[in-house]
Image 1 (tube, rainbow, N blue to C red):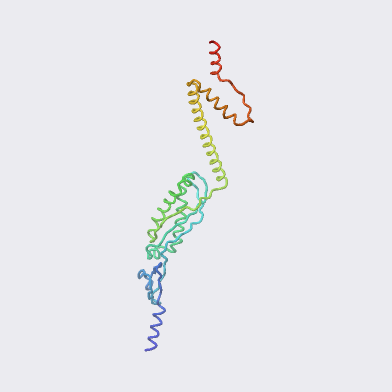
Image 2: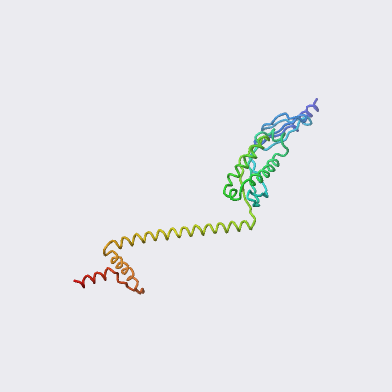
Length: 245
């Protein structure tokens, strides 16, 4: 009797399995699914039962660089990161083998397909839209495996060296274009201001003379300047009127 108690105690102690809070266990009895084991200490009887633990925390899966050709026939390499977690451990274990590898492979093919439907300009300027479309496709397939896809982020878009140089030249030409436009707009504004100033000076008697005197006063502050004084027509006309008198 004593030995029987020891044997039973030994079997119980060796049958205890610990499931952590961030894990769920998949219990099989005689090879059949027997339920999802919750966190805590659980007894798994040897020989007739077995258990596999699955981590249900959010995981970040790095998708390696994928060679793809955009809609406008430009070759590029793209990599991304996927955040997902297991919501239904039984499906993640029973419906697919190696769920992490399955999600990664699905992400790779989806990235190539989605990027092939977009032009290079769309891909570079609308990364968020591309990531959103990739996430929708992955989530629709992964749902059958009990997996929830949180987000997909495109990490890098690598272009061939010749394409990088072409884009750099295009950006430089665009900057030069904006600089020329801004400069011409400034010259146009300055010309309009000068035109208005000339109209005001010509319509006001003596205004040009006062402007001339103000300019001479500014120049006289620096003795190193050599000034060639052009007599305004208003002064000459004033002398002419005085001579007639």
